[in-house]
Length: 169
Image (cartoon, rainbow, N blue to C red):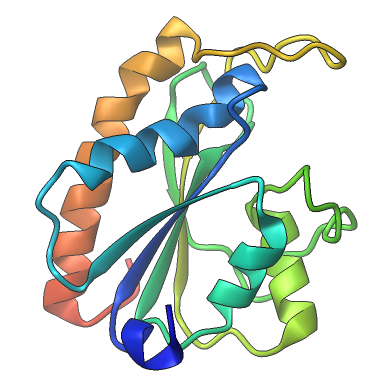
């Protein structure tokens, strides 16, 4: 996608590793969003574990960016979050291309250049990422149940952003 292709559009950037259980939340949300009728200014991309691709995409002139990922915040598995990170969100693991989370990719992108679009995060509390060395394929029941709720949340939020021109949530 070129700069002119994304200008004025909303990027829904889904993140996740299908080999680490609930970490595949973003990937599954992307699959669900692809079959929906979203506003034409919304673009859904499954970045999987491609942190460098996502970091460079964040530098483009999007109107708004929504990152979708599994995020552990200490609540019940399947809990959903809509967050807006501040400009100082950083993480020392920012350059690990296979272990990305929203803070990691934001830090990486900021090291490459200015981010001009407002950024939001739709996160889901994971239950199980599998064994460290073996992983696990498939979402836990709590996260499977959260996917349609997350899709509905994103759909409503994108409609609101489309109508409001990306006014802060």
